[in-house]
Length: 345
Image 1 (cartoon, rainbow, N blue to C red):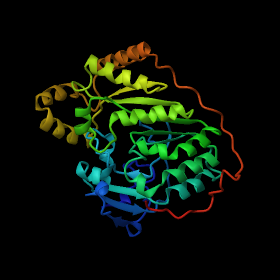
Image 2: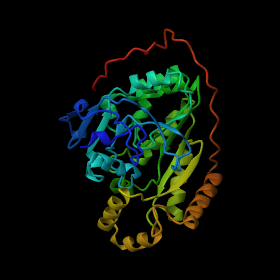
Image 3: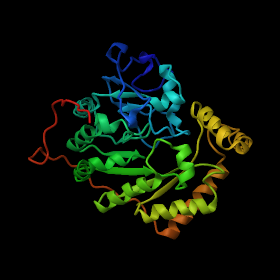
Image 4: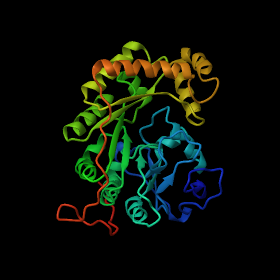
C-alpha cells in the first residue's frame, strides 16, 4: 500500500506531502460476524479538513472524511477510484480494506480553532459514508460533531447509515447554534434491487425511519434520491413508489440524481450488471458512451418526473437552519478541547 500517495487535497496530479507515513499504520481485524473479511488500517492523520478540487461538480468547498473505503459495498460508488491511489483494489478491496483516521476528532478540533480557519461549511459523507459499519466500533463522529458544535461551524451530513440516530442529542445541540443539514440517501425502495446493489447498507425502509425520527426531533431531513439506476429503478411506477415512501417519512425535500459511472466504479458496476442483468449491458454501453454521466435529456426527464411526483405528494422545500452562534461550555456541554481516548464497542 502506498500511503505516501494519500495527500491532503486528494488531488493526485500533485506531489503533496503525505497525510501520514507508513510507519504510523496499524492493521487490525475483529473476530465478529459484522466485520468478517474486513481489515482496518488505523492511521493518525496530519490533516482532516480537505479542500474539494476546483474541477469538482460538488456544491461545497470543504469536507471531512474520517474513513476511506466503505463496507456499504454499493456497486456503483464513485469513490472506488480513490483506493487505487493506495494500490488497493477498487472492487472488493474498497469494500473490505477500510482506512480509519483515529485522531480525526482531536485533529478537527485543533484545525477549527486555528486563526486560519474562517468557519466555512463542512460537508461529510460525500466521499464515503461516515456512518458505515466501522463507526459503531471506532466512534469518531461524536467527537467530530461536538467539535463542530463547540465552534458553531456549519456542516452537513449525507448518509445511508441508521447509526446517525445514536448521535441525535449532539445533532440537536449543534442545530441550536449553527446550520446543520442532514440528508439520507435512498435511491429506490425495491428490496430485490437493494440486496444486490447495496448489500452492506440498511434497508431503504430503515433509512426512511431515520428521516422520520429526525423530523420528530425537530431536525428537518432531506432525501437524496440517488442513484436512479437506468432501466432498473427508473420506471414511472418505481419512481412513484419511491417518492411516495419518501413523502410518508416526512422528508423536507427530495433531490434525484441519476447514476454516474466514473472510472473505478464503472468497471465494477458493469461487471455486476453483466452477472445480474446481462441483457442491459449493451444498453448501458450506449447510454454512457460519452462518459461518466447519462445524457442530459435522460437526466432532465428523471428530474422532471421526480419533481412532479414530489409536488403531488406534498414534499416541501428544505427549511433554512439557524444562525451561527457559539455557546460557552456548561454542565450539559462539556469542554472537549483536550484529546480523548477512543474506545471500541
